[in-house]
Image (cartoon, rainbow, N blue to C red; front, side):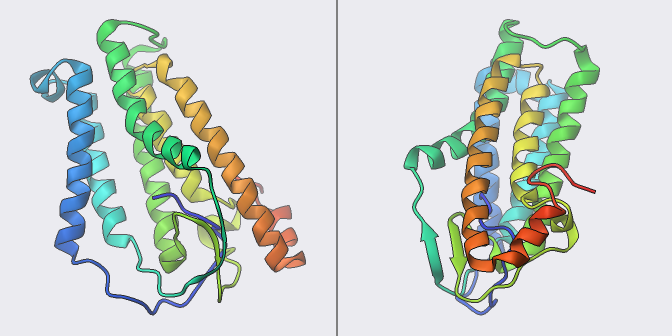
Length: 236
C-alpha cells in the first residue's frame, strides 16, 4: 500500500476495479490477521477483547483498511520509468507495520521495555495511529490513480502540489509511519521503537529516490515545489 512518486497525475482510464464486496472482504481478512497477531501477543482472544486500547486500534485498522481498499485505484497507463527496488526493503516496509503493535503488546504483557507515561501516553498512541491512517487515506484519495506501490513515473503526468501536498511532499509515507508509531505507543512498547525508526529510514531513502526521479523529469518546476515544501514535516 505504499505510495510512490507522490506529485504525479495520470489518466484514469483503465481496467475495471475489483467489486467493492471483494475489496472489503480482503481488507477485513488483513484486519483479522492483525487481530490474530495481537491475540497471540496479549495471551488469547479473551484478553484481546478485554483490552480497550487493542479493541479501539482494531476498529480503526478495520475502518482504515476497508477505506483504503475501496479507494485503491486501477492504474490505466503503463509506467514510463520504473526504478527497481530491493526485495528486502519491500519486505521490511510490509512486515514492520504488521509487527510493531503486536511486539509492543507482547512487551506490555511481559512488562519488558515499557515506556513511562501510563495510560495517557498509550491512548495518545491510539489517537496517533488513527491520525496516521486518516492522513494516509486523504493522501491516497487525493492521488487517485496516481497511487502506486512502485517507484515509478507514468507516461502522462503533472506535478501535484495542492491539498496535503502543498506543504508535505510525501503525506502518504508520513501517515503510514505515524500509524506504525501509534501502534507501538498504544502498548507502551519501547521495544518496538527501533523497528519504527528503521521504517522511517527506509521511507526516507525511498522518498529521496523518488524525488531524484521527479527532479530529472520536472526540473526547475520540481525544484521550486521542493523549496517551499517539507519531505515529511510541513514547511510554512
